[in-house]
Image (cartoon, rainbow, N blue to C red; front, side, top):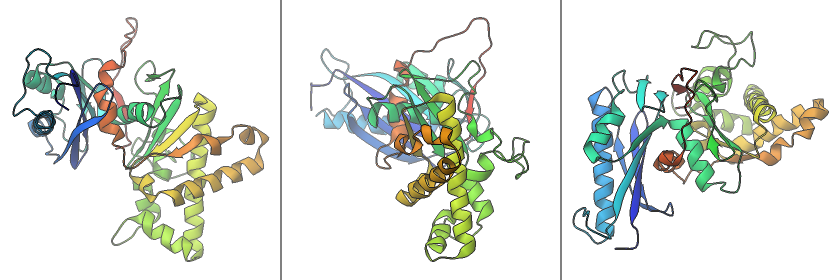
Length: 335
């Protein structure tokens, strides 16, 4: 591989428990990857990222046949670092204003990484980074797509005309806090019946509590065994995801909707129950039938680290500033 790549990029996907770092070449091919446990709270998160980047770069350079990084003519050069992180992020400045699972002092992570490597550093919300990764690696022919992250919370990353869409204030994609049932459970945002209370990993834990293991797996097994209550809850879950997909489709009309996040690890059974929910909605409305939602939805490939890969190319994503408006940080609860 030595000498055939003139530039490399680093992408970092910071999670509450683990941090994944990749080095990619100009074509987007992964050269090296490293996974490190995330050390929470203030300087520890920055230290985790810097350690992961250093380890991944060392691995990449060794694969180029180098014992150390060399800035000589014709040698591979690090051109940028991108970081996707759960929480409240000002993508213009790279400041993290709030990351509940990481601690309140993560704000200067962009500056810390920039000082360590002396290259441009871009920081954005992790769901936005994942959406960019899906766009580049899973569906490059699509100009409009949505990455629906069903994790501990629920959020969407939106790509329109090949660019991330954040809205005027960065709140676009905050669909986890759109009420689907105003009489439903109280959400941590203060509203009732938000999507997050109905279709997230946290919601599964609430509606199907188990003493051990993952609630989604236990629910699915019991539904397969024909347990009446389990079948009812499982199909209700799928119907609620279908309603969320209908809202996304009617609002953004994306060609493709990729479903990812921790809940998506259920795999094909999740897609089947969602399609069953869509069919139920279609049976009640000619408008819903016209949306062809089943043709739009896909399960995100669990083997592709879309968060880290998307982060690697965040620096290519143009940032349009609006001088007449204060742009608030992006905050998506899909971690």
